[in-house]
Length: 110
Image 1 (cartoon, rainbow, N blue to C red):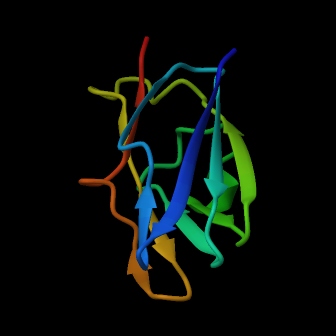
Image 2 (image 1 turned 90 degrees about the horizontal axis):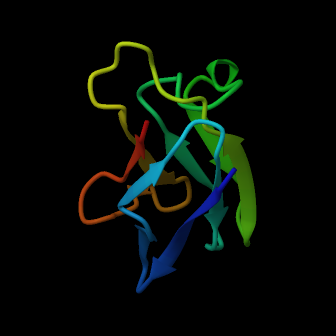
Image 3 (image 1 turned 180 degrees about the horizontal axis):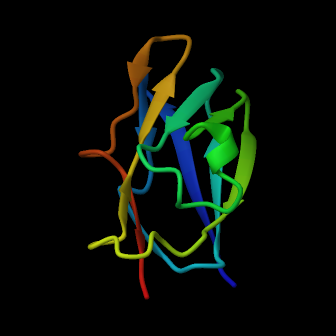
């Protein structure tokens, strides 16, 4: 199984997600890496993307200073038309959302 790293970094005072679209498959791992000095929260509108994610209330909290958290991709929702999972990254300290040319998205390929 493959592992994908999504890095959140700060460039000129703006938080950025380095990968706007991530294509992956069920069973693969996604590692969210916070390369900033501030804690962040990653919000997912749907809770069926990652194994064991329903208990997390659709939010991944990543501490500051080069912290990483990994989740295993579940494979997508049965009957979901496009298997696209948009998400948003929020910086607690600045009260701003990160940019990624548009909302970042994880796409489950079958």
